[in-house]
Length: 293
Image (cartoon, rainbow, N blue to C red; front, side, top):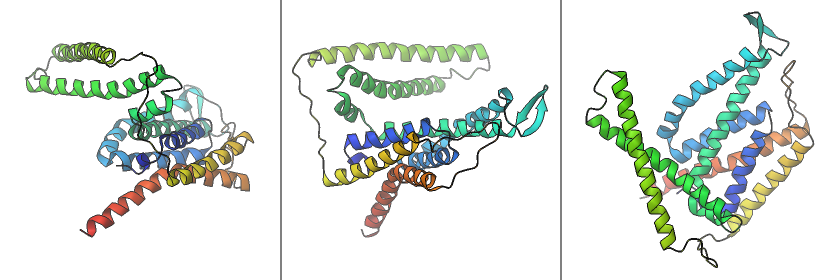
């Protein structure tokens, strides 16, 4: 079990929310790079090197495309690298494209880590009383999307084993893929009907229903909450005061090393890396315990 999973869902939700919001509403390169490195490192610790490594195989080409596309369409900036079709390709536009790609990927991996930690029961606990329909929709989405993806892989592997893709004809291969899609589509409809009947049999929609949860607030939750709350307040204050702003046009700003900026860098690093530090501590503890057996 992940160390983050042992904390109260409110703390985990607040932690991920602040990490994601901070990088979403700033273009500061220090924050973006910190977010990029920490989010991928946390995903490696949670999901394993094999799974995250496979995801990077198609995410890295997307990053390159985004980074190279921006200078081809945006010609602002004072440092001209070369001209293409009469338009200047500038260093500032290239750097901006790189930062956008790093920002997008970091947000993706923050959400991957969030989906790994925040299970359906935690989502229902957080939003069940506020908006039962929303919590049900989120829970079903988190369940059905990976479920149907797994069913598609199973049906595709079965079709491959039966020789559906043995032909070199592109049309036949496309028809085989459509057949697999039809199988998964039929399964999804049947699963939806079964889920609906099960919900009706269990009394979904009836009033005065209670919800069971096994989440208890402990002293470690209080300490973690104070740490996360302090980081959130510090970052929110600095961003409101405007220290998180950064301009790339017409020239890239110098990275500020003033007191407020350093506080922002350190605050975000401490807040974002707390999950990674917890996972490292848990892994080291398990290694020590196994060595004593």
